[in-house]
Length: 593
Image (cartoon, rainbow, N blue to C red; front, side, top):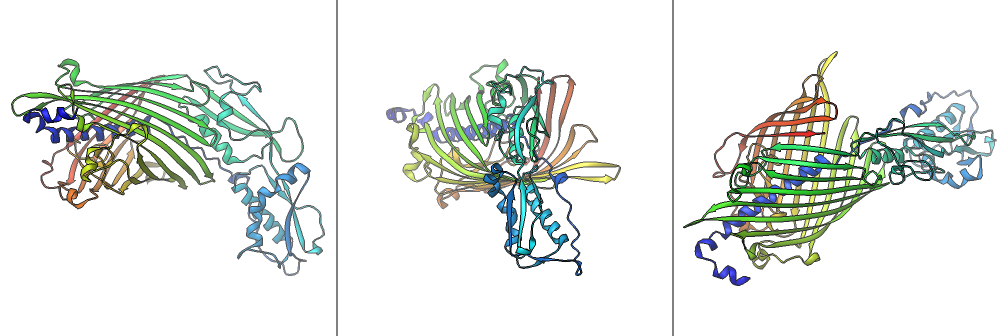
């Protein structure tokens, strides 16, 4: 096959570098579209249960010097039964501030008011950790011994019950009479100590299917009248088992079809374990009425998501093909390509509290690419890379504001018969190196205007970046310029580098109480190459652009939703020779039914 490259006519061989750039641009564009599609199709429900209503009000800390007090040298727990005694160690954390540090009370003389305040503080720490039905009381005791004993009454779950009477879809049940969706969704069961954080996770798993919904209530135990025992009643509904979607946009490249149409089939809860499967197919609309050999692109993608208690499995595969006519020195020829990308990811909820969540993430990937000139493969452009990723993500809320951060490390390997790229022979790029990636997303909703009729605003900022340990193959570089990165540019020409950073900012204003909003955006990106010799060849390093747009939803009839986004942008800053400054507009229209 190497002989093929040697025997190529001079005209065709001279096109190798331009064609390679075409292939690189197509791959970068497709990867950006894949990421946007996955974000749109895979929901990320957020459930936060307010426990402030069960917290105890602080006791006024006024010391009555005439009231009797008791020197306290030791503080501990006791329980009402042997079952609680086995679990009492779970609540040791609530005593730490009273026995250690600046707030310690050991050695002090405490009166009734101070003891009540201490109990209130311990109780609220326990509730803050999510143990909303666990109680702390002070029993009769002799405080002259210097020991204060608090009685812990753990909040046990006696049973989990379900109400599916309002569901429009028949809900399968297990032997216990509970929906089968509960078995993989709920990280708690009868006999456990109720923790609101586990209940939040379970509800998020149940809500991960877009056509399903879940709510809960804590009711008195139907089996046990002892203090601390209760049942959980979960109201669960699902409206339908599948959804269809149609869409049209102008996100394609001019050379392979700017206008794109797509159809999506989503199966909600296909195995009755809160899983989600989707299949989507997109095709350029330009080639429908013209010769396929002029310009063409199509793509299909498959995705599957399965939550299992504190775990989340995510698998995707996409296949992309394109062809276009390229002018040669003496004749035109068809340059075409195809690529496949497979990703498998697993995340684990490692920590959760009232304001934040932390996930540990790991995964693997395989990517392949083939390019052809008049149906003859260009061997030097064949690519196949594979590797793994590992990292963590952290979500935290500040009132109504939310910050999501993610850090990951990607490493290429020789797995799955990965091919050593030709660039590595000249130290111009490799897939088997480390790449550090980081992302941060900040959302800040706020209101301005008259107190009785304020206008809803929202500020959103997305910061992303990567740093490579060595020069990268083009598919792994960071690319900027276009609707998915720096708006104000049409994406026909981009800047890419081994290292890069991108900041996207949006300020949106709701149009009254309607589901429509106007927005303005300002984006900035910077890229650079690892090696100076390659970096000097870049046309530039920075792009800055702005955009203004309108988006929203319509609901013309039941079970039909229409969403749209239309915008226009303009370059603010670009390298000399990057192209004429001009308005870059775009749109997308989607229907779901």
